[in-house]
Length: 513
Image (cartoon, rainbow, N blue to C red; front, top):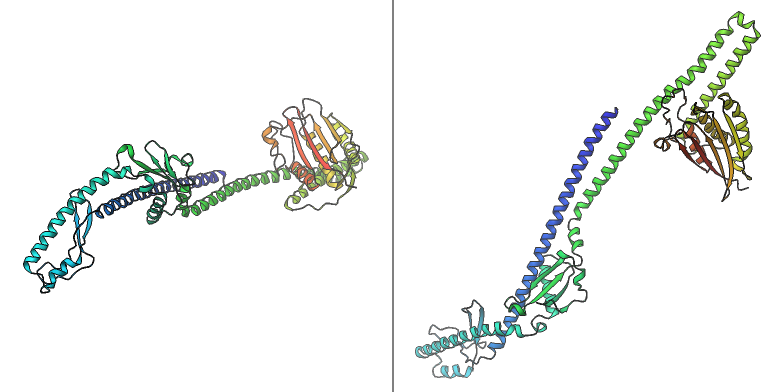
C-alpha cells in the first residue's frame, strides 16, 4: 500500500473519530446540564411544598385554638325538610370559604337534652319549631363566620411572634423535606439549616456547613411568606452527593465512551503498525538491494579469477597464480562474512538466542580483536589503541557473539571515518561498582546526528552519510550488537557529536565465580 493511501485513510478515520467523540461529549454535556436543571427544579418544588405544608400546619393550629374558645349550642338535625329529625351525636357540620379566601370546616355542638325536650311532646318537630331552629342556625353561622375572619387576622398578626422552633421544628422540616424529595424521586441525602434575615443560624443539621456547599448547590426558600420582611426565616438546603447523583443518572453513556476510546486506541495502534510495516518493507527492500550488491562484487571477482585460470599463459606463471589465489581467498572470506551477516538476521525472529555461555577474559579477547583489526585500520592510515585498565575482566558470555559485538563496533568506526583526518580508534575497559565491567569503543569519525541516535539500534536502519556513498552494509550490525548485549545481561549506550566522533559504552556483569 502506498504511503499516500495510508495517510488518506488515516485522515478520514481521524476525522470520523474526532466527530464521533465531539458528538458524544456534546451529548453528555447536554445530558448533564439537563439533569442538573431537573434536579434544581425538583428541589425548588420540594422546598416550596415544605413551605406550604408548614403554613397549613400553622393555620390549623390557630384555627383549632380559636374555635375551641367559641361557645355554641348544639343543634341536632340532618333533615331540614320538615320531616322527623334524627339526633346526631357529632353535631351539625358546615364547610365554607371566608372573604379572605380561606377554606374551613365548622362543627356546632350543644346539649342533646334541648332537642329531646322538643321531641318529647309528639316525637316530631313542627313547622314552627323547624323555622325557629333554622333561624338560630343561620344566626350562629353568621356569628361563626365573623369569628373565622377574626381568627385569620389574628393568625397573620400573631404567627410571626411565635418561636421558630414551635412553628417549624427541625424534625418536622426534615420529615417534610424528605417526603417531598422522595415524591419527586430525589432520593439523595441533604443537609439544611434555618436562618433569619440577618443570616444567623437558628438551627441546623449536624453535617451542615455553608462553606462546603458549592455555589450552585445551595437552595433557599422562605418558610412563612406571610411574615413581615424583617421577621422572615429561610430554609437553606444543600446536597453533598449532588454531583454523584447527576453523573450516575447518565452512567449509561460511560460504556459508549469506553468503547469509543478502545476503538481510538486500536485505530492509533493500527496506524502506527501500518507505518512501521511500511517502513520495515522499505528497509527490507534496501536490504535486498544492498545484499545483492554485496554478493555481486565478490562473486564477480571469483568468477573473473576462475576465467583467468582457464588461460594457459596464466597457469604457467606462478606469480599470476599466486595473485589469483589471493583474490579468490580474499573474496571468499568477504562472501562468507556477508553470508554470516545475513544469518545474523534470523536471530531477530527468535524470542531467545541460543548462547554457549562460558567465562571469558574480556581484556584478552579485546586485545586479540584489536591486534587482528589493526591491519585494516592501518590500511586507511589510522591507528587503534587499547587501554585495558580493568583489574577484573572475567565475564560470562558467548565468546563468538562477544567477539562479533566488538568487531561490528570497530567495523562501523572504519566505515564512518572522516577522510579529512586520520582515523583514531580507542578501546578501553575499566571496573565499575557492583561487580560490573565497562567497555568503550571510541572513534573520531563523522559522528551521528541526534535524530539518528534514537534509531541506530533498529533493524535495517542505516545512518545517512550525506555525500558519502561508499558505505556498504545491511543495517543489521548495530541491531545485532544491541540484541546480543542485552542477551548477555548487559546494556549499551551511545554518545556522539556530529563531525567530532562517536563513543559506544557497553556494561556487562562480571562472572559470579
